[in-house]
Length: 233
Image 1 (cartoon, helix red, strand yellow):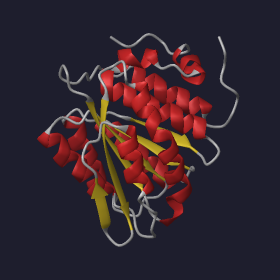
Image 2 (image 1 turned 90 degrees about the horizontal axis):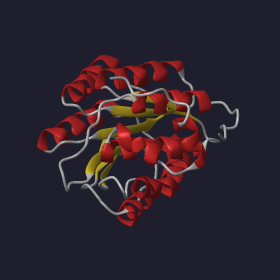
Image 3 (image 1 turned 45 degrees about the horizontal axis):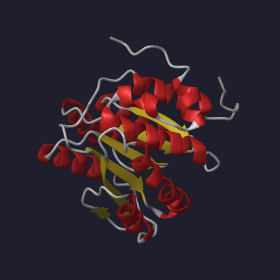
């Protein structure tokens, strides 16, 4: 079996995928694509990661072609209390056009507002998973944890991807993941491959549940999946 290179973050990515593999199946209703909210911090420091996510988002759709498809809503916050979310899109080109039309703008984080939006969306129609990408937290953690817990009660896990290793942000992102039933993983500016694997893993989980995770085709994803223990019963 081919092993992943020994790079910082690989162990954390493997641990993240191990947790995803052990989670209960959340298959969408027959004939419906999995619904995923792709939430990204678009404040000023985030432009390089935003550009990277623009390049990688199409792989989420490619990863789920055989497991029922995917509908993605892009949500982001930036500037002075600016928050926006697209409709749920089922085409990678449509999502890419939306993403490339956004530039990052300085401002404070709006994670609570983002999670409240996710709660409202899953109350309308089941959201199978949320991806939250960021590197900062400038809000009171308690209301954020409450919103994460609401998502957990509704069966909508939040997968928090932290750029950098700010310990305050890490504690908060871990709590959001735990309370919602999701998982946390770090990445850095040099780990596009890690981010790619993380995005694909959650997309597959949203579309087909943990059993579908084994269908990932990239060499690094197979190498990680091959090291995972059998799912918990």
